Each structure stands twice: as structure tokens, then as C-alpha cells.
Length: 186
Image 1: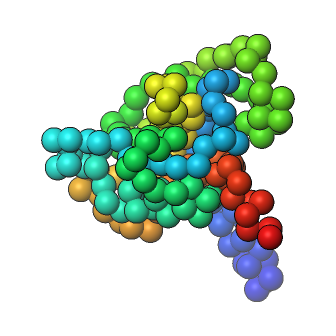
Image 2 (image 1 turned 180 degrees about the vertical axis):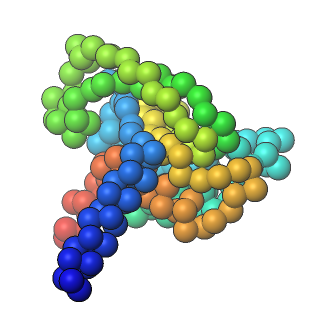
């Protein structure tokens, strides 16, 4: 009887974890014009007067993004960075256009500009974090990652959840700064 109770609790726990994780979507897509192995530096897009708007400025998110970018070898600089980073939090459900693409690492090995963009419409849930990487010279977004349904309202400031959302998004961006891995192998 005791063993069957333990098995029943395990089965319920597995189903509960599966049902709650289906509400979350963590995805990314990219531009075929990105030179992902060539970027070395980054800074944040200047938000100007929006520093009071929690949708476009959150110090926890900025610190988590900065940490992750540095972890992947990118240097933070305000002087002609390769990448401009922006992000936005969404507090309502919305439709979002993404793309069904080859795995970014497989594509980057051949960097083919002949690939097609196959649009996919996502229904993103309240509590979405969107992170964009812009190529400063080309003036275009080269990568976007998003985690949907991961936090609550505008006053949400749970550091653990926000850091987890950033980490989940950046798990989709698996490139190190140019020369970073070679320099650290010496």
C-alpha cells in the first residue's frame, strides 16, 4: 500500500509538472544576415525617458543580460559596440510572428542567405520577455529570443524568475564573442 501511494504521488507530480510547463514558450529566431561569430562587444539601447517604464527598463533583467553576455565573452562598451541589446516585457497576451528556421548553429556553419523565412504565429501569454540583439552597423535585428508566460504584472520583481527567464532565452543564443574561446584555450 505504501509503495502504491508513492508511485501515485510520483505520477501526479509528473503530470502536474508537464501541464504547467506547457504554458511556457521559450523560443528564438534570427536573421540570415547576422554574422554571429564576428561580434565582440555590446551595449544596451538607450531607453531615454522610459527609465520609469517597467516594460522597457528593469535593472534585474539588465544585470542578468549583461552577466550572460559577459559569460559568453562579449565586452560591454559604449564606444561603437557590435551589438545593441534591447528588451521588453509584455503584460498582456498577444500574437507574435516568429520563424521556423534551421538550427542556428547548423545554419551558421554554412551562413546561407538563400534560406527562406517560414513565418509562424505564436500566441504569447501574459508575462513575456522579449530580448533583441541588433547589429549596430547593419542597423537590423539579427536575433530575438522570447520567454512567454514567465512572470506576472508590471510590479513583478521576483529576481529568481526574471533571471531564469533571461537564462532560458540566452540558452537559445549559443555563440561566444569572436576570439573568446581561442583566447581562453591558451
